[in-house]
Amino acid sequence: MKRRLTRSEKILLLTVLLVGSLYFYVNKIYDPSMRAFEKSRREVESLRAEVAGLGTEWSLRGRLAQARREAGSLEQDVERLMVLKKAQTEREATLVLAEVLHLALASGLDVRNLAFKQARGSESAAPARPAEAFSWQEYGVVVEGSHNELVSFLYHLSEIQKLVVLENLQVKAGSQPGLLEASCILLI
Image (cartoon, rainbow, N blue to C red; front, top):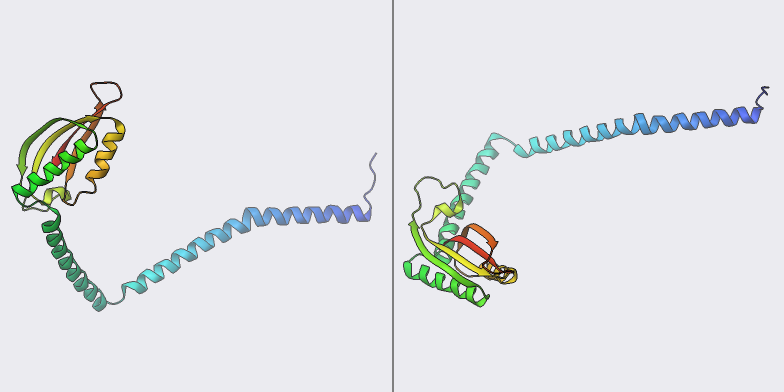
């Protein structure tokens, strides 16, 4: 038994259908299109800004000359800092090694092994890593202690005044429970 809808029910049903259709259109069609449009607009604006920033060939040459001057200045700064931070003589390297050993002992670590390995020279070709740009004294170091002592040593090592590089740091269980053994190559 079907009954006919009243006029107010028809208007209500039509209103619900219109609101539902509008909701579907806004969420499924309009919003994604606007997001894509805004993304494209931002890309176009960034490209315009990039092109405007490039300027003419004349300004590019000026920028290149400026970059070369800055590179020369940076090279001079590196040379100046190398003299201040890098141990240049065997005496300075020995003093830095003594300071590193003092830090290890002050941190509570037991120095198991310390051996001079070799002297590394700097190559004339461009180095692959910054540590390859200088000549170094290479030492093999093995220390043992608790986790806190090892962390304290590494923290204090980062604060010394001269340049020191740790390579191949390996940490494993020590000779007694609760102790760790750390071995590394120390470059001074």
